[in-house]
Structures are given as C-alpha cells and as structure tokens.
Length: 378
Ligand SMILES: [Zn+2]
Ligand SMILES: [Zn+2]
Image (spheres, rainbow, N blue to C red):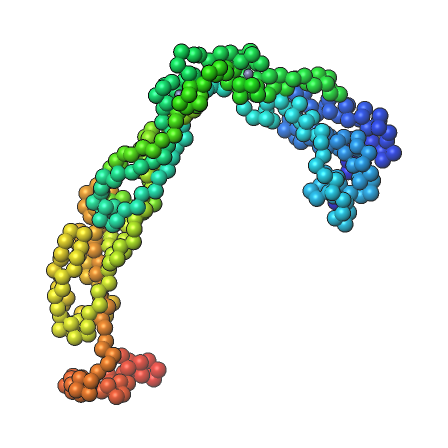
C-alpha cells in the first residue's frame, strides 16, 4: 500500500507546486524538532519531509499518481517495475536540520591522545599446564609508544600548530538557506580531522601517530585450574592509543588441547579402562598414569560392567580456593568373542557348576520367574 503523500501535506491531488510548497512550509514550522520537542512530532516531521520530497519532484509525483511509492525499497511501482533510484535532497535537508546530531560526534576539538584498543590472544595449553599453572612465553603484535616523540607525533624540535581552517575549533560551520530560513550546521574540520591542531613536521619514526607497531614478548603467569575458554586479563598490555594514549588491556584466552587419555568436566577427570571378563570376576590390580604420576588401583572381585572407580583428589586443582576435583575411571568389561574349542568347553563346564542353563536362560529363577509372575497376575 503506497503512502498517501497528498494526505500528509493536506493538499488535493490537483495541487499546484506552489500550494504544495506552502503546505509543506506551514507544517514544517509546526513540527520542526526545535519548535516541537514531542517525539511523535519528530516522526511527523520526517513524514512531512518525505511527502514534500516526493510531491515537489515531477518524476516522483508521477509515480505516486500512478499508484506507486517512489520512496519504497525497490522503486515502488505497482507490479514491481520502476527503480526510482536513490533520491537526493532529503538526507541533505535532514543533515541541515539536525546538524552534528545526525552526523554524530560532540562539539569541540577531538583530543589527539585517545585510549588504546584492547587485544586478545589465543594460548594453547596442555591439560597438565591448565591443571597446575604455567608461566607461558607469548609474543604479541601490538602498538607501543614512539620513543622518539614520546607520543606527541611531532618531529624533534617542532610543535603542533593551530589549524588555520577552523582556527582550532575542530569543526567548520556552514550556513544553508532553506524554506525555514537559515540553518547552520557543523562538521568536523577536514584539514585537521577535527583535532583543531595540525602537525607541520611529523615525527619520522611514527609518521605522527605517536606509536609504532612492533612485536613484543612477555611471560604470562597462568594460575592452576584454568579452564578452556577462560580469559586472563593483563591490564594495560594491549595497544597504546593514538598520540601515546593509555594502553588497552590484553586478554589471553585459554585453549586446552584435548588429552589422549583424560577428558575434563569442570575439575573432574574421566578415563575409560577395558578389562577382560575374567579380571572383572576375579579382581585385579592395575597402574594408571594420573596428573601426579602413577597410581595403583584395585579392581575388586565381582566388578560389574560399566562400574566406575573414583580416585579422590586426583582431578584438576580448583581455580579458586583449596582442593581438587576427582578422577573417575570407567571400567568396560570385555566379553571374549573368539573361543577355542577348549575354552568353550571349560566355560560350559563352568556354567554347569553354577547351575546356569545357558541353552535356555528363561527356565531359570530370578528375573525370568518374576517376569512370568507379573504376567500371570500373581
Ligand atoms: Zn581544522
Ligand atoms: Zn614518533
């Protein structure tokens, strides 16, 4: 649905250019943001401008008269044809009215010295390093203070001078004539980029930036118990700002390399050990490697599949406070798959001694008799 631009200005479809102009001026005075601070008036004002933009242009007015909307995305002719193209004028009017508010930025010269940006660096560590902490050497590409000019950006023996274009104000004003009278707008001075000062002879080392790019090496102390994804902040180890401004912070992001044996959940460690059925039945001992060295563990006789052994205090040290996580050893009991004729005979013998009818398990008591009873209504 195309907008009713005639209705917005309150004129008939046969209105002359003069009538349209008069209607626009009347409404613009009424809704101009300087006169009418109501936020709704602001929207109305935009609408009025858009309507005038359209109806004061013969080509766009024709599109409206044909039922289209020249300001709609894609041209706005009914049926999708058209392509009125980007309209000129409207944004200029808005800029003139709203001045620096629309363009952004505050009044007055911009300081040459500004704070530096933060930086982030990725650091890959092994499980042992994240668990117990490490002093890791890192290199970082960054900006440091230019020592030749100490951040001033001027060549030795020279100074900043006041910008001649803006007389040090950092902004230039232009006056535009509109239907509402004279409108003054301010823009940052192009000559000094808004600083109000210029550097007549830039420092040869930093070309006036006050800082130079370099590669720095430093050592970062990683505390025990850090986790994958954590960031360690090194205050003011980031980039020095333009004009030698305060350095930003450097964040070191921890990435823990996957371990061959252990997986980590919080401060607990988990691993899987496979043991043969006979060892699970008879019990066994084994030695596993933990973060602290070798650990002898005992598997009790009659250990069931999917059992877990918990080894207290052999996980990752807690980052804050005392103590450590646990180490869990998940036991997978392996059933033999290929039996020799001899082994099979012995296993059948073994089953017989236990009264286990392996040929027809459901003849046994226990679970199967309970199952029968459940269906027989006992
Ligand atoms: Zn200037
Ligand atoms: Zn310099």
